[in-house]
Length: 65
Image (cartoon, rainbow, N blue to C red; front, top):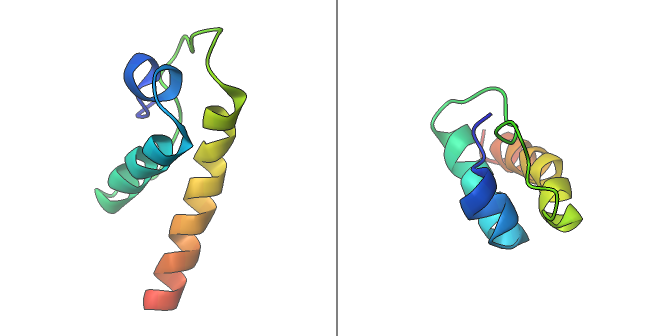
């Protein structure tokens, strides 16, 4: 995976998750996922933000293209 578990998913909010997803996609990463072993206390909102951010990024790319 490429979304940091302890620093981003566990300790931060959805906005930071979205930023990290965008950075990965901008760098050409084609599969976006959390690292293995997601902390049990990770906020559900942060996990749900991953697919939302991927869809949003792709929508923005379609508009730009």
